[in-house]
Amino acid sequence: MTNLSNQHYSGRESITESERRLKALIEATSDMVYSMSPDWKIMNDFNGRVLFKNSVATTSDWKSVYVYSDDFQLVTSTIEECISKKKVFELEHRVVLADGNPG
Image 1 (tube, rainbow, N blue to C red):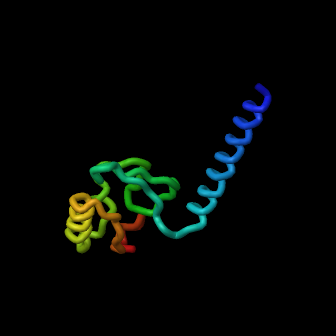
Image 2: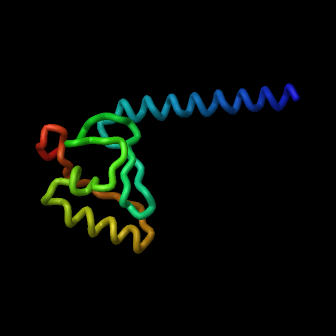
């Protein structure tokens, strides 16, 4: 029993350390780190920083809130293509920052 308890404790320590390193990386980067629902309708912010206008932890209207209007169609069509072709989403585009300016 002691061996299993030690393994469990060691496993928890590893997870805690991994989470600590991920948090440090997220906080150190200037990039936005987020996750999306499989259908790309819900955005979940990982780092809690207010980078964007009206920023919230989870939002379903993220494109209309965060994506700069001139880039909206490009973002939408790229997402649709990635979903239909099961591709990784990679696109650099402008966003609406907290001060309302594009970034």
